[in-house]
Length: 270
Image 1 (cartoon, helix red, strand yellow):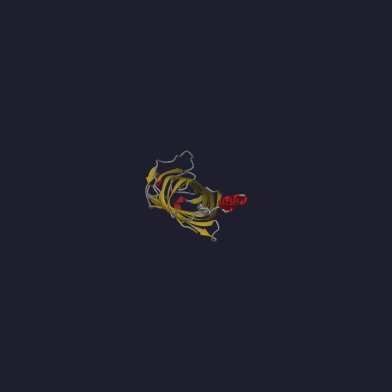
Image 2 (image 1 turned 90 degrees about the vertical axis):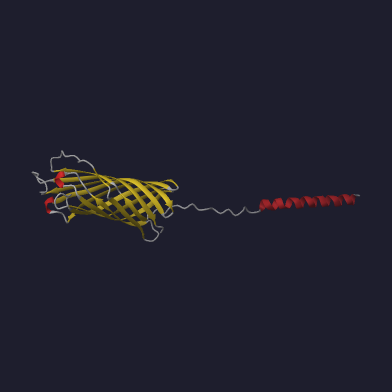
């Protein structure tokens, strides 16, 4: 009888051990293979090609030294556009080059200078971009700038080219995975004239200020829609000018543009 009880006890203990073994093995087993899915973070270098339409409201101020002139009535310039090509420099480094051209219709209601003309501005810049946080990128650039405007020999805006240097800063903030907002500011001086009509006189000072607020929507990994507002102000001062009748032959011309930017940006991956 005792032998039978011992036999049954041994069988019971063995059965309990076999039941507990899988649980113990499961506790010691390594966790399942969990692979992290990387979240793509855009490269800070803003490479790509932007083609945009820039309908503009233009106003011009003309001063002959009296200091009491005001900006003239504003005129709408629908025939203006922008092309900007940004490319990466030095391999995978955050350095870039930029070639930009904008311009088109340039009219003014200032009677003494006529109203028909056109202009084009070119920028050749280099810079660097740095990621401040995962959703904020700061871009800085500097380079050379040139602007040329021309009108009819009679009844057009003055014909003159200007050359100088420019620098800018741009802050891009990612609001949503596909939507970002950008703030841009640029300053330039262009004191070197070329191909100017003689009666304008001598260019003594020329400068530019530009600001922009822009929203971008990523349609796909390689294309985005850009919508923004641009403000640009040009200032040019002349001496020995005979284009208008003034006592001291001084001439000051200022123009300010309020423009909407509607464009497609094709993004290039490094």
